Length: 240
Image (cartoon, rainbow, N blue to C red):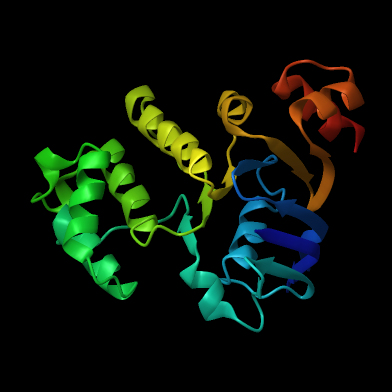
């Protein structure tokens, strides 16, 4: 579903910052690929290039067979993207926000899809509440629903549980597991190692813009001699 090859991105200075330096990976249908790394590792820049918000200086990204440079509209149509900075229209109600994004995606059955997502994310009580009045957890539930309104085959989630309590985070994690079970391709970036251990079929460890290692948790355990993902992560970063 996703093929990333030799991705490279610099930002002008002074000083010039190399945010992503030759990163390559693939993500398949029916799996969750974890993208891990400390702050400044290049995770968010990589994801923004993947979803066409940034153009690579070098390298290619293909999503479901479409090149992000040459077919950005087709790429966007097949992706649901959620970032830590995603915002909602504060003066619209939950139902109005979802209806708006459904129409942007050209859905013919907007009402049915909105009703389905409101029920799925337990938002019935808040459906007619303005978004400015929602708690952090309910805001994020609406954000996830907005991202998947068009039932995209690819989900790109950048720290989707940041700032959430245990109950709200659980809703997001269960949804990701469901999406994988339905054959979706999910790219999942997080700082929470327990989430990555629970969700991710394969992992890519980034540091200073480079991919230090990739593979299953068992593969990374064998490569580092460590058992827990946090210890694996620290061992790889310290060796680099």
